[in-house]
Structure formats: structure tokens, C-alpha cells
Length: 376
Length: 84
Image (cartoon, rainbow over all chains, first blue to last red; front, side, top):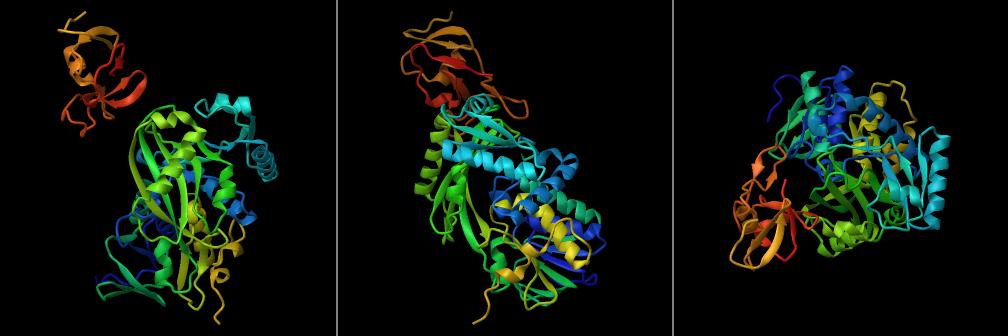
């Protein structure tokens, strides 16, 4: 492929939701954009994930980016086409015991001091709100501002909006290497641009050597249609214990209602694997965990299982900024399990720093330098 | 009430029906005179097609459990079948 119509200001590698959100933000800010995607729009981690939009509180920086992004999602939601399946169902954090209920109280306090609405439910309140949960749980925390989308269609929508404003999207073009303001495609040809944004998810690390991004494998199962089976995105607070482990495999109860009436059942986390094949022992652990919390899930029909790879960083924050050692290469990757939520905030922060305009939240925690191990 | 030759009594959408032992739920529904087993997402009628548990078109609710492949489930005494 050869560039014939003059080089764009920005060339984005990767048409997942992060690349798509960045593309639209660049074009509405007046820059010209080309997006190069190795496979199809929204086909990688964007399609593999749950599409949960969630405010998180692992760290202040994680809170700020997720909270900022959730606000952007709420602004975008009325414009989304129906196939994006936006569902403002809220998140219900489920506490199994008193120890986890203490986490409900801590979380409520954390959100309250930062003006994020949340509601504490005791055991009976939780049982009434989600009748399919097993009896005897300690309680929960409802965060009503959270929601769910079907992310591949959102990525497509964002790129269509970008294309209406002049962006070009080249699918099925494999990028082999990224250099200063240039990408080399696998057919040997190259594309030049004012700057290159590496939004290639887990593949970002192969295109810009030195990025500390690890693929973290996950499994999901989708069921047939059972409208009303659950009402909120449900996540066990034991998740906080298991998902924090950077080394061992873990599973957590995580069930999501879809607008179609289907249920998405997760979740699993595994490091050090490249094979996308379904891992039946961990799938079995994951589903047993789900049934422990929600016994009737044992009676529902699962229709498909798949895997995906999150782009994980050591500090669980994405990489948003200039690549060290380059002046015309930027990174927008490393979003781990929060890429759908944080894509919109990522796009704002990236374009803000490139255009040297102020940002709504501090940008420093996500800069790429922190992720580069110093050379020996 | 429709009478078949023998002896399993079940209910299809509230109608009591007798079928031979070993007959599938799909056959019982057809015996009850119904060809539309469920309604698709786009509101089209759907019925038993492949008859061998592959096409998923014949799903019905059996004893309160949704999405059962009626062509693969033998009728049992007292079964309650609900199609849409």
C-alpha cells in the first residue's frame, strides 16, 4: 500500500476501541488521521472483553481515569446506535462475608468523598435486588453510574464518525515495525505521518521494544437469553483479592446482563500464556465460582466460550504518552481489563498532550517513561 | 384431550396430551398440533428443523427450564412444556 494523498498528521496503529476513540478525538481536534488495523475493527481485546464501564478505586490515578472516562461515556451514550447495546445497569459489588462487607463500607467512603454516587445494601437488600444470588451473602455496594456496552460496535461507530470527518481506515494491513513518524507494513511498504500512535493492545510491545506489557489471558462464556435473570453487573469483592495477584491464575464471579437477555459469565486471569485455546480446567473453575454465587446458573445454556488477552502493565495503569527515545511516536496501550471504560479518557489525554492543551485530570500517572526499565 | 396409543401424560401449553413412551418432546408438541415452537429474536416463528440436536431451533421451556432442545428430550410423565 502506498500513501498517495499526502501524509496524515497522525497514523494510528490498531482499530480497537482505544485506537478508534483516539482517531475521532484527533479529527474533531482538526488533525488528519489514518488508522491501520492488522485484522478487523474492534476485533481484538475490544471484542473479547465484557464491555463493562466501571469506576475503579485500586489507586487514585485509576479512579481518576475511570471516573473521567465514565462521564465521557454518559455524554456519548445518547448518540450511540442501538447495536452498541448501552445498558446503564450499574455495578453491584457483592460481599460474601463480613470481611468483604468492610470493603463495601471502605469503597462507599472512597466514592462518596469523590462525589461518585453509591448505595450500601445489607444482606436482605441484596437478596431483593438480585434474587438469583445465593442466600446468606453479607451485602453489596451498588454503583448506579456504571454500565455496559457492546464494544466492537462502539469501535465501529467511533471510526465511522472519524471517517465522516475525513479519517481513513485501512483494515487487514499488518504493521511490522514503527519508526520515527513512519510505519513499515508486513509487505515491506511504508506509511509516513506527522506522528504515529501505537494503540495495538498486547501487540504494542512488539512494535515498540521495551514496553513492559504482558498479555493476561481471560475466558468468557455467553448464555442463551434469560431476560431479567440478573439486573446489574455483578462482581464479587473477592475479585479484589484474586485480580490483584500478578503471578497466579485466578477466577472471580462476574456476571453481566446484556440488553439481549443473554448473560456474560466471567472471569479468569492467567499470565504467561500466548495460546488462545480455551483452557478447560480454568474455565471449569470459573464456572464453578459463578455457580457458587448463583446456583441457578448451573441450569442455563451456555452457547459460546472464548478467550482474549488483556494488555497488562505492572502498576495497572495504561500507557498514554510519547514513547521514550522517540519524538514522533506515542503509545496508547496497556489498558488491562479496563480498556473499554478508559478508551474515551485515553483519547482526550493523548490528544491534549500532543496539542499542548490542558487536561481534565493529571496526565503524569499514565506517561510511558515509568514503564520503561532503565537500560543496564 | 388427544389420545395416542399409550401412556405418558404431559402438558403442552396447558393442554394435556398422551404420547407413547420414548417419544420426544418435539414430537409431542407436533402431536399437539403446534408447528411454531418459539419466536426468534426478529419475531419469526421457529420450529423443529434438524431433529437431531444441532440447529437449536426447537428450544422450549420444559418444567420451567428454558431453552431445552425439545428434539433431544424424551417425554416423561407429568412434564410441563411451554412453547412461546
